[in-house]
Image 1: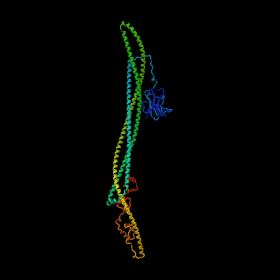
Image 2: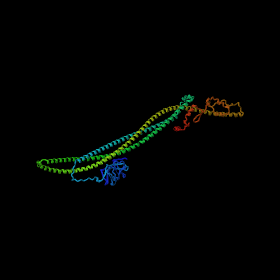
Image 3: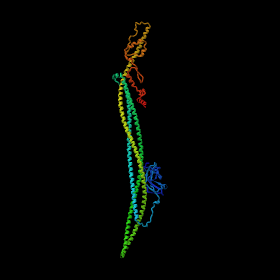
Image 4: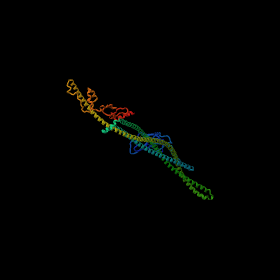
Length: 636
């Protein structure tokens, strides 16, 4: 429940209302406050806790014309039938809007019957004699009133002290809320920085993957001379290439393991960030509960302020009545002193009457004069006594009223004490709740700080791993660069061999054409021999038919197509070296044959394939990301 007590102010609220007549309450609406037909004014007992504790209520009539720049004065009428029946209770008016918020509260008042407030008329012709007992009783009553007033003052000071403590507590809670908000904003900023850092690390890891893939695909222009010088000893040592391949594969496996570890750490970090976000979502809920508790404490504080104002007004009224009683007591003291002087004079006159007879006549005349004076003085004193009697009667009536008011004040003080004890219990409960909330928030702050420390340690470890990975990657890149230079040299050799192979193929084709031409010549010779031509005038066959280029070698298929063994001699006498008997090289991955390359070139060709290390699948047609996903699928 929230409230704004300053928007509606109740005016001219008396201390007492009569039950036999309807009650009218006047109130003023603040500027900018617009009443509705669902607003109502209720009668509550002093010390109410919720708006549902009303004893009677009436609906508010909205104004016909609204003037936004001026406050509006309104009134509500309560029928005597619906008024409370208890006599010793105090009540107050409260204005409640359609949402159930209290917008204003009046000062306390009570209900009494008209008979109780009627003044008792007394006869004015009676002589009032004030005795010492009455004076002592008045003194005691005055002392009791003074003690009661002092108790009220102490109670008022206690209430003021409680209000000040409550205000300090509210200020402290506000400061704690501000500090908590600052910590929340710092935590959110750190979480955002952690997210940005993780995104940067992800981008950096992706960039490293792309660099690895690019470096594995990149080829440099070879230096053929250096390659020839380097390749000669390498051809004789195939085990070195196998060791380099194993080392490169080991580096690749380590890189895959490190990437997998980085992915696991990244997933853990994301889970930690999710947990931190959940904790950050819980903090506004706790903050909302604390705000509701603070609003409730403010409402209680406002109620206490209203009670304090009522107590202060009652204290001022009692102080005025006490001053009046002091004046009456002073008049009574003066009257008593005059009575004592009169008694003394009468006693002196009696003593004079007891003197001897010789002085009787002289004194009789004197006494007669004094008697006349005494009669005159007695008449005056009777008038004064009548006046004093009226004053005493008025003082007694005021004293009775003061007693009744003191009784009401004592009851009100008792209720204030009860309300103060209730409020104290509520304050203790709210302080306990706030302490629990503060402990929970401190615990959450500790958890968040611990997680931040873990995050920092994890980031340091991750940076260390990244540095190690970068150093290993640099080493791998260096080895890859060396291997790529070797690959480039091998590619140059392959191109050279391909050129040679093209030349050999051309020579082979030329030999085939020459062979066909020779076969045609042989057929012509055979036909001539069959026709019975003269054999001496023609050569039997060309003794030596030189090939067009002299460096070619016949293929095996041509040897099978030759009609006779007598034609093998010219082709085998070309002085061809051992290259004519080279075995055909077959790739173990793509199963393609390469007849004119070396083992080193064949190994370089096999390494150019992108092969899965788990299932040995050739993935040349896959992209780098697709190839990595394929490898990771085996790990999962």
